[in-house]
Image (cartoon, rainbow, N blue to C red):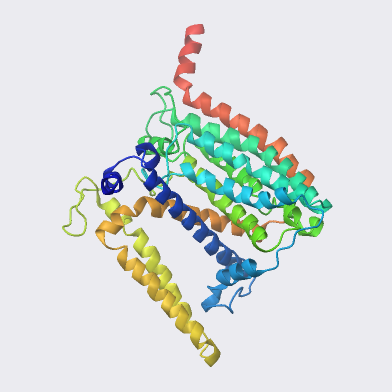
Length: 448
């Protein structure tokens, strides 16, 4: 049994590929805990960021700067009265929130946080992600129908129409990125090496970007950027976030498909929504932003070898500089914690909060110092860059919510069918034409 556990530590495959189901279970539990942690941080971060954008403080009462507010919210939801309408379809009413959470977390089975940091790598990984994520609409439809109420049903129908409409444009953008994996050559316009077979593997897509020395957002510029833009707009609509949050339009539908839900079941819908945001962000990062690759991954600089600090002579000074990014980020967060603690008013009622903020800063500083250790620093790089990119997408979600007004439903449908769909078809066509330019030119020359 011990050999079964330790044998995977030296493997270059994912646990699923290696057939080690114990480590696959460990990865699943770690991903579940990690994504749940991101949801907790996002809950606090969204409220604080929106508050600062609107020139107010946000949560401040529970813990230093409201850091314990998500825990207080979780306790409140777990102990809140759980109400079910008397005329509801009880089995489906129970199943709907569980279904939404299950689908949201199932997508992460093939999300690659690193070359081997995934539960498994399928040769149809991107199809699996798109297929599973599209099933989330069933949970929303079940919730609206089982509530036996007009407003939830209307919200569920709006959501199903919205998600189906934007999935088509999203799929076209994804196909464009998949086509780019088979169009070799180094750099943004690496034309001339011919078309390969391409790949649908999530890890393979990131490796193709590494081999071609370009993130696909810059591939055939501006074609890759337009494809990324289509996916970015569609993923906001897919997750029912502002400005495309018509299924939950409070001014029209009270709260949409989950109007009749409360307590724990309502919190499951929120968990599924935020997990879905992380999932679609992971797809965008993998397809267009290099996955776990750091910025400028093909730039290494002169070789460097510093004993006890950097013993990788095959890598350069640029790799060495970027390796300190995780520690520097944690130390910067610790600095801001200390800075805000010093700025706290010197009032007896705020003494505990000030001490708590200093303690939080010490924890962040300790983590930063641990990340300076070479063994830890080397192994955390891929996970750090992937999570850092997810954090950027999460902030953009908040920014969109604070900036843009909600679309009318007819406007939302118009954007999906009359703007993104033709644009997606055009991007796919142009990608193929540019990538196969030499072959097309040779064929035309032969015909003429």
